[in-house]
Length: 70
Image (cartoon, rainbow, N blue to C red; front, side):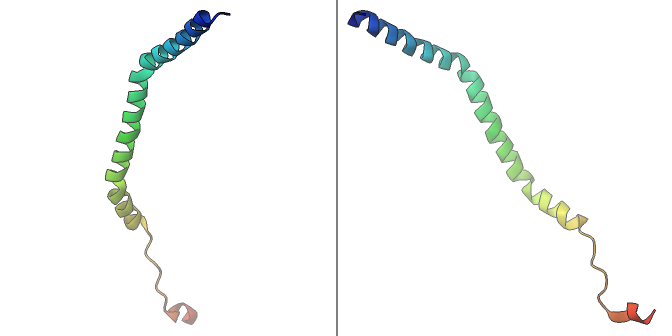
């Protein structure tokens, strides 16, 4: 193979890689955007999650010794 053919082959591979990246770049941007949005929503929901956990906690039974008298 002469250097011109080798250079054309490498250039074709680079062009194909750039083309595939540009073809899928909207999908990549969408995935990154959705991940950032999910993280932001999780941060916004965090105080409510803590509040619900505190509200769902069962009250502790009284710790006096009156049950021994029954």
